[in-house]
Amino acid sequence: MNNNCSTKEPPTAIDLNQVLACHGCDLLLEHIPVAAGEKLSCPRCGEILKAPKTDPINRSLALSLTGLLLFPFAIFMPIMTLDTMGLENSGNIFTGVIVVWSDGFWLVSAILALTSILFPLAKLMLLFVITLNLKLKRYHNFLRLLMRSYIHLDEWGMLEVFMIGILVTIIKMHHMAHIHYDTGLFCFIGLLVATLGSSMMLDEDEFWKLIENGELND
Image 1 (cartoon, helix red, strand yellow):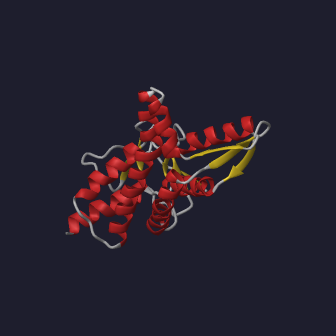
Image 2: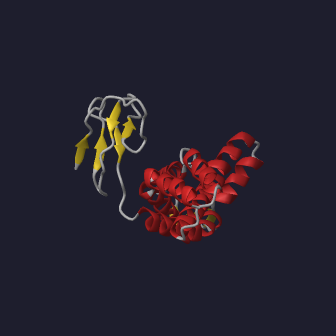
Image 3: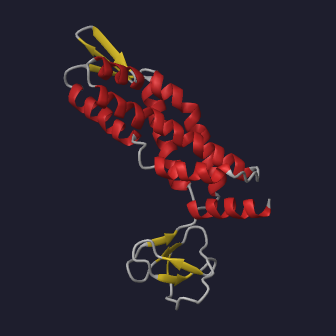
C-alpha cells in the first residue's frame, strides 16, 4: 500500500516530528504515520520516504547472529572440488585471497579480502551489537557511531559478487570436470541469504528513533 504525502507550508519553527523532507527533491511534507508493510512516497518525485518493517529488531538480530555463526564455515571450508581425470582440486574463499596475493596481484587480493571477508564480517558484528542493545533497551552513546558505520559499510559488502563468480566457474567448468559441491558452498549461500536478509529487515528510521529517544531518557 502506497501513501502519498500532502504538501505543507514550512512552519516558522520546524517541528521535526511533524515535517518530513524528501530525500530526492527536498520537498517538505507532512509526516504521516505509516504502519508496517506500507510505504510513504513523495507526491512530486515518487521517492520512497518510509517503509516500516515488521519486528525489525528481532529479525535483524536473528539474521545477524545466523550470519555470524555461518561466517567461519563459509570462509574457511572448501566451496567445491573439481575432479579432472582423477586430479582433485578444492579451495575456499580465504585460500583464494592468499593465492591471488601470491601471484602478485596485491591490490586485487586486498579488495577481495575487504569486500568478501572483512566488510561483511564487520557489518554482521555491527548489526548484532546494535540490535542486541536495542532489544535489551541499552541506549549507549556509541550506538550512534555503530549505526553510522553500518550504513557506510552496507555499500561495500559484496558477497553477491563473489557468488556470481562461483556460478560463472560452475558454468564454465561443468563440461571439463566433475564438480563436487562441498559444505562451504551451502554455508556461503546461507551467509549470503542472512546478510541480504538482515539489510532488508533493517528499519533505519525506527532504529534511529529508538537510539535518540533512549539517549534522551537516560
